Image 1 (cartoon, rainbow, N blue to C red):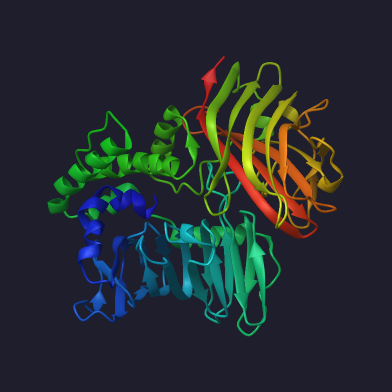
Image 2: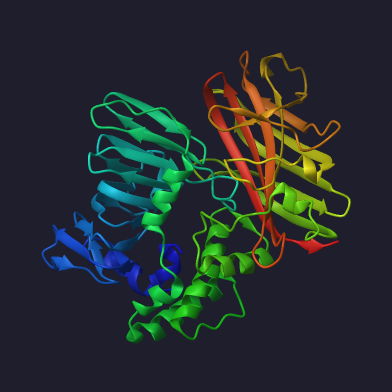
Length: 502
């Protein structure tokens, strides 16, 4: 459960006061377990020693988590830091004001950590930076986790987006020091950094490393967190939460106790994600909230395998449909929309994916942009689905490209390509048979395309199981422009929809 789920409903009561208070008040401790200490602070009124849930965090606070502790901090821009046992962190710089250049700089000295970037990171690609021993992480709107050992060596993992991210906004990180730099552009990939050495190679994250990090920063069950919320705060939080839900357009909710507050904050968070450009249908929001009560959105429940989908437990036909799915870039800017429909006919062992959309202002190179519409209609066998990201969960996948836009007269014609996954890359077969190539129409190029400017469009997705098989279906469509190793634009749209029987 993320930090927003813990105090998201009382932001109006607590964090809106920040503009009237000392500038150093930058956030609160929203959930903690075990010993958490404030070792030092630049704020005279800040108490040194043990922290409790709901305390203010000030600029320059040196925070240390005990060997059996755990902490989540929410900053006023909704950035979330989760720290595991033994971790130490300082917020060195924090500017969040619509009338200024927003900026956030944090220093994590050791231990396990995870953070979800907030509104500051959306202000620009260099607005949020997190330092670890030996390197700095420039955050470009995403979820990141890491583990720093006693010797100061850090493993840094980009968590989102990935095939299981339920539509996390596309993000990336740049890891750099005076000896070199490296970009991590795909969820599920990591980089190792040692002091006095350049950043290591970007590679697919070791499942054991990810498990260690997740175990170290795993969020508390709602009942455990509810126990840390004082009874005197319950009525205020309930009222604030219900007001927030009403303002978000979520109806039919009445929070009456701490556990229910947490459950509905999960639902509010799903709505907040939708407000940030993610795409859920109404029923999916409720199902996601049910799941999110005890689990992090970054790690949804395991989806079915190919064998599961072909088994007797999956019968009939389920369709997952969404309209107006936003196509967003790394910085959160919207470049278009798409409509999608995925149908699984389990009895016939058949899957069909139908897409249509349009984008505007897609960067082809540093001086050229394009507007166009795209469409896809592919049919194949469910048993042709593959696996991605080192999991055993069934995924459909397909991609098409045009490799030299400078040679185009009129509209580019796309050619099917074999997609790859993993490091080293492994070819993944196209799920769909026949010629399910993406097609383009209404092509309009502003500027001049260069030799070898490439346009790649791909689609992937699968199912998540919460109550019954196939409760949620998700689809990610990505449009990438590049020339060799240089990537110019990466725009993606992800939709999550509840299944409807056909």
